[in-house]
Every structure is written in structure tokens, then in C-alpha cells.
Image (cartoon, rainbow, N blue to C red; front, top):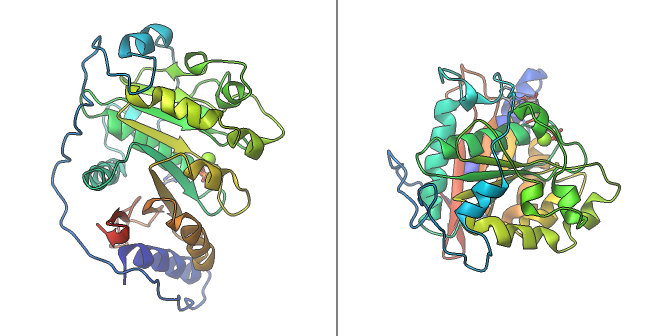
Length: 311
Ligand SMILES: Nc1ncnc2c1ncn2[C@@H]1O[C@H](COP(=O)(O)OP(=O)(O)OP(=O)(O)O)[C@@H](O)[C@H]1O
Ligand SMILES: [Mg+2]
């Protein structure tokens, strides 16, 4: 049984147990699992550790790091420290270590495939997409010299800006409408090397806007400036935005909330993203008594076109 499947099954068992019922026997997944050992420390990505002030090769982008720093001045954020785990100076929060492990696994996957733009999604609302996206972006920049861009692409019910304690606009929707440029919608807060594009002002046609071609354009323009681009999305089952966004990303990370996500729903969402570079599943909110880690369980990557477990 693959680690992904095991994670989904575990979430279902916990959900059913919490409702006093019996777990539903899940259907076996088609993919084969190959477990691999974890590296203690993630390898440094190549050519991505330019120091402040240095120029970055453009690869089609007109921008350098100087442009980024000059056009995106440092502002003030008031993050919610209960859920933004890495803003806490003591760093004693539950979950920090799990996010470090998740980072390590993403670097492992990056050794085998190109992986910089990661979409974080889930089947249903409130599974912890924004929580995972924000903390993943934070843990990435805890490593010296690594720069991350966090994008709130949930144009329907964005709340990432609230968790970071900043404004929601101008942001992505303003950019997609052609009203602002990249740097006018990008923020920089107190955490070194962490940049943020909020959702922007509310609009009535999010799916059309996300698919209008400017999303890909934006990602291409800013990609050379960052080591990681983490994109928070709306839930995948009720609306199509996440599926569209996945086409512009190198990898999709699917969040499954323990005790909450029905197995069939998670499996359906997983199938939807299977051909869109699904790199892993994060089992979120696992109880401390469980032998599973609290926030995350397994990631897996593709090798030679075949999904393989790395968990
Ligand atoms: N592992 C966790 N530990 C503590 N709080 C969590 C955890 N995961 C999520 N939360 C909290 O649960 C709430 C819902 O999480 P979040 O907003 O990340 O879900 P979401 O999937 O992004 O929801 P939506 O679909 O509405 O965008 C938030 O208040 C978040 O801070
Ligand atoms: Mg969210």
C-alpha cells in the first residue's frame, strides 16, 4: 500500500472513529510504492543562493534581485503567531519540525524533477491549505539565502492575508485584471526573504480570471527571483480554480485533514491531480497520540513518469 494511500486511509479511519462508526474499506490504488530513506539535511538547490544585491540570470524574466528589493520595500505584518509557526521567536510550536521534514522531502523530490512552483490544495474547504502553504513558505526561508514567494490564489474566500496580518489588496486579482504590475501587488514583511502576493480585491469571475493567461505570465516573470513559489488555492472539488492553477505549477501538494476529509472525496481529488504533478499529501491535524506526525505524513514524487513514494 502506498504511503499516500495509507495517509488517506488513516484520515478516514480517524474521521469514522470520531463519529463512532466503522471505517469504510478503501479501494486499492493503482500506483506502486517504493519507500526511500530520508536525507537528514536537504541538499542545496543549484544556482539559487544569490546573496542580497547580486544579480540573477533572467531566464526570460526582465528582473534582477536588485529590481525586486528596490520595487518591493519592506513593510509591516502582524502575523497570527498561533498558526504562523515560524514567526514565533522561540520556535517551540508543534509542527515546526514536521514542516522542516516536509521541506526536506520536497528538496528530495527536486533532485529528480524540476520543482519550484508548488500548488497547495485540498478537496474541501477548511482542511488547512492556507495553514500549510504559509508555514511551508516560512520554513523555506528559514534556510539562509533562500527566497520564497507565497501567493494567495484563493480569489473566492482568501484569508491568508489575515493570518499574516497584512492587507489583501492590491493583489493577484488586480494583476490578473491588468491593473497592476508584479511589484505593485507584492509585499515584503518582517521575515527575511519571504514575499507575498495577496488575493487582491474581490471579483466575480475567479476561474475565468485565473485562466486568462496572465497567471502563467506572472509566474514566468517572477520565477527566476525565487527559490520557491508556494501557491495557496481554493478547494478542488467544489470549484475548478485549483485544477487550472495546477497546470502552471511544477507540483501539487494535497492537504487532507485528519478526522474530517472523507476518503472518497480525498481520493477523487487525488485522482484529479494525479496527472498534474501531484508530489505529495499532507495529513493535517493528526492527534498527538497518533503514531503519525502531527501535520504532515507523506510526500511522493515522479520518477520516469511513474509515481513513487518517498515517505
Ligand atoms: N494543523 C493545524 N493546527 C492548528 N490550526 C490549524 C491547523 N490546520 C488548520 N488550522 C486552522 O484551521 C483553520 C482553517 O485552516 P485553513 O484556513 O488553513 O484552511 P483552508 O483549507 O485554507 O480553508 P479554505 O478552504 O476556507 O481556504 C484556520 O484557522 C487555521 O489556522
Ligand atoms: Mg485557505
